[in-house]
Structure formats: structure tokens, C-alpha cells
Image (cartoon, rainbow, N blue to C red; front, side):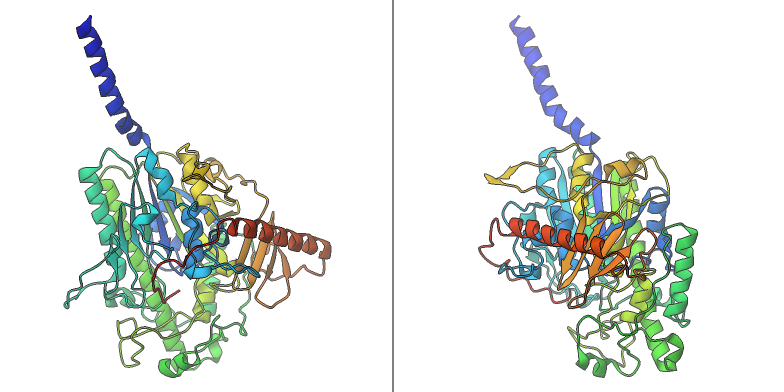
Length: 546
């Protein structure tokens, strides 16, 4: 009898020890890939002429969301993506009329945990490779391994970067180093280590490329692929991308008109002296440009394309690693961009040598408003604005084991605040109501899991934006939007995501209701923001490129 009891106890112990592994094996791995300053139309599957076969393949065998939004700027989007809150709620963007530290120097409240903290109880290992731009150190955010690419001013050196929150050792001879490739190298190394040491556990990997953020730095062989490709100008590029989007039924809007009066969001007049007479600060009629200006602008676009192309190549290497590990089918992979393409023009870091080869380490170029408009086809405006061009991003979702649809579109309006609740829903995981005894406020995002199975509209009250005075709200298909110091504009996005037909005078009552809802939402967000005022600023991080 005693032997039977001992034997039974032994079997129970084995089952207890074995259960976590079997549960872990059933959980999908999760990868979120984030690009930096990539426009809505920069991928082949979203209308581009740029070669992105790996991301196009994920789209062909997964889902493409057509109305997915970010916050219009890099650090607010990253906070929203990993926390599930509007960034203002967690002190990562500024609110009007509130004396609260916000923006890229703001510190999240203790209860504002990032996604890895909620995944760890399920046995997830958590990895980060690339740009961080969230407050605090990476490992303190719940990650087990990290490459923190703090150097965002030179793609050809690792100087200033950190591995597992410790400074990297820089060799004087860094021939061959390129940030986008190094980003993928680290991601692959983490996956290889995971396969060797933690194969019985699932993983979450946040892969945040800096590309194609300025400065426009690319490998010569990648630039060569696009040399002289854009001499036809941004008008020609916009028309071609727009037609491909229509052919793929990505939208049914008209093509937005160029806005020659809209230039870079920030003024750096000294930059133009350094960049020379080929640079211009507005999207002029292409035929009005000089031959020098056409060549200069087309070269910048070629480098931007090369950066997107190289990012896709490196993503292909990561996908191959997943296949080698035999976990590709049960890995939920997302891809998005942190904001629209950028109209900024500036010279930072080591400056700009006009005699250096464009795209090399000694050059410092930015895309500018002309080709930024083309990269954001068919939408208006750019990064920092909350018109559609500033806040619209591709979203690809690929998961063969969990998404049966292949190559289908999903048209539900959605936002980066939805990613955390979507992942928690996929895992059937309930977020705790408290953290260290402090209540965790309800988050505004919605799970997109229903849209994984059918093209349904995920129900929500509204989507809301505010960044540096630019403001917007979307309820149903109507959007109220205004640039800083400008009056409100009203658009029906069901057929006008180009924001070309201002309906503010036609529907004044509707506009008034949306304005009232924007202000109510501002009050709700402010109430959460002041629940736990920050005790101190976040660290001494210096990330100059934003």
C-alpha cells in the first residue's frame, strides 16, 4: 500500500513538473516588428515599387489591415504599443493644460506595465532588438535580453548602443557594420539561444528597426538597385502607388492633393545651407524643379527605398531562423510602422559632407515633404500630424496555426492600443487588476481577435489623438481633425480618407458632437494621467533623433 502511495505521488509529481512544459508548447510565440518612419504605401503589398518579398509573403499568407493607426510619432506609439494605453495616460505624451511631465522625457506610473510583465507568468521569454525610446531601462520593462540601439544618428557604427542595458564595446575597425543588419543579427542570436536553452517555453520578441528613419544611410549595393528610379518625381510615384492600391482594393478614397504650403514640421534653416541648392522645403510641382533638385530629391528617395528593402531582407533572415527552429507556423507575427513617413529636414550628429556619397556615414539626409507625401499615398500630411498621412500604418498579421484566412483584407478601424488586448485575448489571459497593490486602470484598446477570423468591425466608442497641438477624433466613419492652431475639419472616411472634402459647414451639429466627445475623452485621459504623478524624470537617456 505504501509503495502504491509512493508510486502515485511520484506520478503526480511528474505530471506537475511536466504540465508547464506542455502548456508552454501550446502557446504561440509572438513577434512584433516595428519600422520607423515608414509610410503607409512603402511595402509592395500596400502599393509600393520597393522590393519587400518577405513582408509581402507574410501578407499573402496572413492578413492586411487597411485602417490601422499609430499615434503619429515614435515614442508615443511605442508606449501605446507595449502598454495598451494612450501614451498621455502613462506620461509618454504631453496633455494640454496639465502640469505633468510628458513626451519623450516622461516616466510611466508603476502600474503602467509593459506587455512582457503579463506574459511572464505563462512562461514566456521576452526579447527586444532595436530601438527602445520608452522610459526606463529595457530589462526593467520585463525583457530578458535586449539590444538597445540608442545610436540613431549613424547607421554605420554601434557607438552608444547597449546590450542587456550595458554599453557595448566598440572596435575601432567596424567595417561592414550596418544597424539594420546588426538588429537582425541580435534577434537571430536571441532566437538561437532560445532554441538551445528554452525550447520548451514560448517567446515574445519585440523587433524595432530604426529604418527608414533619418539620416538616410544605406548600403551602396542596396542604393544601386533604386538609382535613378525616382527621377520621374513624386507625382508619378504617387499615381502609380495609388493605382496599385485601388487594384488591390485597399481603399476607395480619392488621391489626396499635394499641399505645397506644408513643409517640415520643425524649422532648421541652417540645414539648407549645409545641404545645398538641391534641397527644397515643400512638395512643389516636380516639373518646376531644377535638374539639380530633381536629382537630389530622387537620390534621397532611392536611399529611403534601399533602407526599406534592406529591412525586408533582414526580416527574411529572421523568418528563416523561425523555420529552422520549426516554430514558424505557431508564431504570431505582426508588422507595423510607428508613424507616417517624415517631412523633417535637419542635419545632426556628425553633420553633412556635401562631397560624400549620398547615403554614406558622412552624409546626413532626410526624406523631406515631397517624397514623404508619396510614401504616405493616398493620405494627407506626414509624421507628427494626425491627419491620415501621419497616423496610418500597414498592419500585417501572420499566424498559420491560428489564422486560417490567407491574403485577406481587414477593414476595421484599429490602433496600436489594441495590440496588448489582442495578444492577451489570443492567450486567454486576464490582465491583473492590481500591481504591487496599486489598481491598474482600465485600458482603452480592443481585442482584434475577432478580425483574425472574419472581416468584422471591432466595436468601440472612438479613437482619439493629440500630439503637439495636432488633434483628432474618429467615431464610426467620421473624423474631426485639426492641425496645431488651425480650425477643426470634418471628414467622412468611408469614401474620403484623403481628407479632401471638409464637411464642417455641411454638418455643424455632427462636428460639435465630435468636438464635445474629443474634450470628454481628454478629461478621461487626464484623470488617469494624474492618478499617480511621476516622482522623477525617466533616467538620463539621450535620444536625439525623434
